[in-house]
Image 1 (cartoon, rainbow, N blue to C red):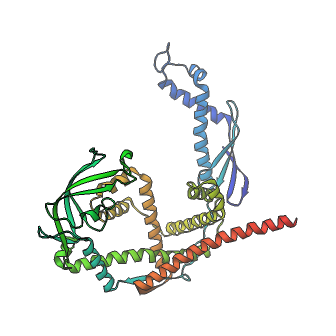
Image 2: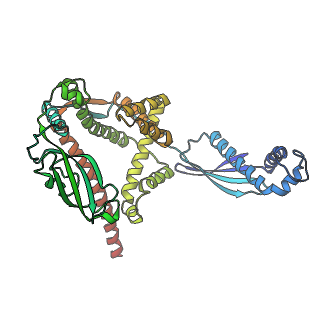
Image 3: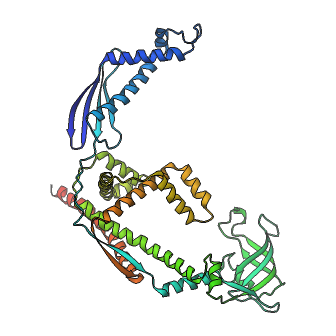
Length: 457
């Protein structure tokens, strides 16, 4: 095998590889010998078919199979010998081939850039510690209490009012005829919420226990059975009970109903939940602050094929006109993602960071605990979607890298309350929107400038 560097432009290298015809013939003979043991042809005993007969019948396909194997083996060997770090799948361009001829092909390779990760000591960032005020926890407790109202029966003589819970059986008809789902037992609705059918609640205001009430309403326009959509319906309702809401005490008993040990435990759980929501957004801001500086501090040539693949991935669901409209901005985002991916991966490899399968399984178990009742669904999702497990592993790897980076930079910790947190998050979101708009405006201005030059000509 002869390997020559044919050309080099930036990160793209083209190798010229020649495999002499003797080597190819040797591989052909080896494959024919193997096939003699496998092929069964009429008129010959198993394993006794002459290689010349096999070649006359299957020669072209055998040659193609052998050449395909040689291409895979020799291209891999050439990359290894030249010590190239390949970005993506190399391209093969056959220049000469055929039985009795040398095999000559070009291997076009996009290489990864040499990365010298710069020291991190000069990078500055702020991480936020959120303090959840007592009044916010109290508001959440009231909200929970309101969502989980307690009721007690009204007397048989008392009429229902807005906010009451009415339980009833019903039998419905459309144009005097029954339909699928026209019978209902023990239906409970809170009057005033209008969650059943339009104007249904209003007609149950003023009913009493054991009363029969006819409710006339219109079936919803999006009813699954089109023949019932927008049709007038008559509901004959038997009122089983009328209950009024009672102001529940926010105490240990209420906390236990919510799945907590006691009220103090429920308050802690609420504080953690709210804190987690804020921390997620604030951590993203800290992460971007760090990554922006890392990206700015490094100049890299980027493999063209990786950038193109990223753009394709980003725009695969866009219409052609949308792809063209966002072309410049998408390329900018793609280049940033590839650059940061290469930099972080280099840092991770340099520091021997890895994510084991055991760690991935542990993270899946954490997700399961956060989704009680959906354990089977989560496990099935990861079992049936290997790419989801790989994506999770990638996220965990990036998180590990960032945590190590934080130990090597000047990272200040700032304790803030929710009001300040909301302001920081709002400003960050606004800045991102403004940056996207600015990119679009610059692109538009470039087009206008080019148009003016053309007009002058």
